[in-house]
Amino acid sequence: METLKHECGVAMIRLLKPLSYYQEKYGTWMYGLNKLYLMMEKQHNRGQEGAGMACVKLNTQPGHDYMYRERAEGSNAIAEIFSRVHEEFAHTDKETLHNLEEVQEYLPFAGQLYMGHLRYSTTGKSGLTYVHPFLRRNNWRAKNLCLCGNFNMTNIDEIFTRLTNQGQAPRIYSDSYIMLELMGHRLDREVERNFVNAQKLGLEGVDITNYIEDHVNTANVLETTMSDFDGGYVVCGLTGSGEMFSMRDPWGIRPAFYYKNEEIVVIASERPVLQTTFGIECDDILELEPGCALRVKRNGECIIDRILASKAKYSCSFERIYFSRGSDRDIYQERKKLGEQLTDAILKVVDYDTEHTVLSYVPNTAEVAYYGMVDGFNNYVRQQQIQQIEALGNKLTTETLEHILKSSTRAEKVAWKDIKLRTFIAEGNSRNDLASHVYDITYDCITPFVDNLVIIDDSIVRGTTLQKSIIRMVDRVHPKKIVIVSSAPQIRYPDYYGIDMPSLEEFCVFRAAIELLKERNLIDIIHDTYQRCQEELLKDKAEMENAVRLIYMPLSVEDINAKIVEMLKPQDVQTPVELVFQSIEGLHHAIPNHLGDWYFTGNYPTFGGTKLCNQAFVNYYENKFIKSHPEN
Image 1 (cartoon, rainbow, N blue to C red):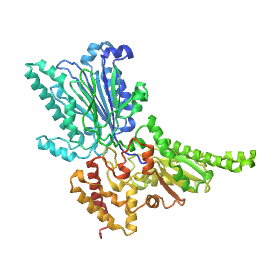
Image 2 (cartoon, rainbow, N blue to C red; image 1 turned 60 degrees about the vertical axis):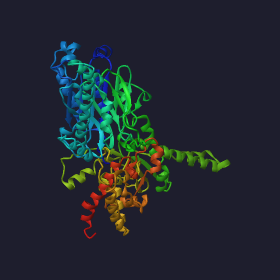
Image 3 (cartoon, rainbow, N blue to C red; image 1 turned 90 degrees about the vertical axis):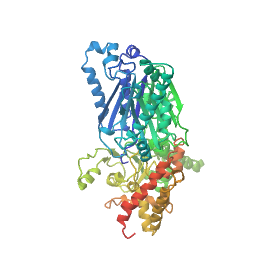
Image 4 (cartoon, helix red, strand yellow; image 1 turned 30 degrees about the horizontal axis):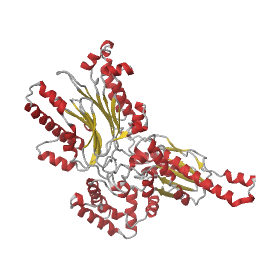
């Protein structure tokens, strides 16, 4: 599969005991800092363009900093930011490092609240400016806000307009900065509300500050901020006064898990991260429910608040197929099931010839689905053996039994992930030649021109890797037939909730559908779809429908499969190639609790997703289709 940039990763930890407790029990007051590092490294797969972390100290004296942040770009960003933090400690004498009073008073990042973020850009925007967390400073501790998240908002234009109408002027047009400004504005109002209440109680000076910090309710801030946003998100934040929160979108699109005991409250994007980092069991960890926020107050009280009413749950299925760590207990079984239930479709393509069919996979994310596919073939072979034995009845002999039991599933590691194509090589032919060698092959692993070769991948998105590397690679061993299997259904529609596939024309399925419509003199469907999309965009968002579905209505999955092969198969490859995709029904059977399938069906959970999909087709038609077909 082509590498996709996708949803980011978050990690938070709140220490509920004094630093002296962790010094005594775990041998270091850096317990929270060290655990944050592990949580971020365990989620490195979720962000390789940048990383950042923040820390808040409680009970600092005026004149001393209490909120810290480090950010860096690049795949080594995690190591870089933690190295910088430890450099601060390296310049401190050992006596001070072991004096907890001085540590808490003077050393940076020696706090009780930690927050980390791993970034994958899905907007094309790069630079340290866009690396989370984002920080909004103020001389009032309670008004300081540090924010990060795994999110992508679909209505940022509307929010921007609303902010500017309030008189604000955000410096940067991005959902992250606009959310920071909007939430910061709401936090200011919450602090001012408590300021007025404190004055009514007759409090003055520092007593007012203490009252505010003890009574700030971040649930109010979240309720008045997040109701404005349309998208998939897990938003995490710290305030300078020591409030911590993490909130999940009402559809449960993006994932969040948490664990708490008497020592800590921790949050991460993936469950195995918490299991490994803290040595806890799967069932100890809870999933943050859609529309809810986990809040830890300044005094350490942990609360789960319902901020927004939950919608129909549309947790991302792609998260389960590809993005999350396969070591999660449930994800592992789901991926195996995806592979296993493709057995019948694969058998049909190879004419049920298991004796001359070799199973393999594209490393590395398709490996678990491959194990499920092997299980499915094992079950089929075993059933065939049982039927043959039963059919022989009294004629069964040792010789015939040995012959029957000799049949088995043939599985080999045919493909090896070999090199990473370096982006500094830009010249077309050179780049294409190198791309063909991203994977290497195990030679002499099949009988040439006799054995079918089945290769399973987790999904097929753009088709680039299929065309430039995989088909050409496996053709080197000269199979009778190449069968490319996708554990996911055909990807037909863009994503707008945090995955880097926002345009229609990049999908090989969409391109194949357009070509088929043109070949079959059904080009009017393309024009009609354009008109319908324009009409839908004029409607109120709540009434809008996804008109792009019209493109696929006259076409079968098999039609599109054949066209994709025709488009992507290199001309010098003579071996027959067939595609097998997961069905929508199979997807939901394997992953019943994650119904977010808009990539495959066009059923977007939010109004904003539907709107952007219609707009994507309008953009394609006006910028690509018309230019390619000026006579139309």
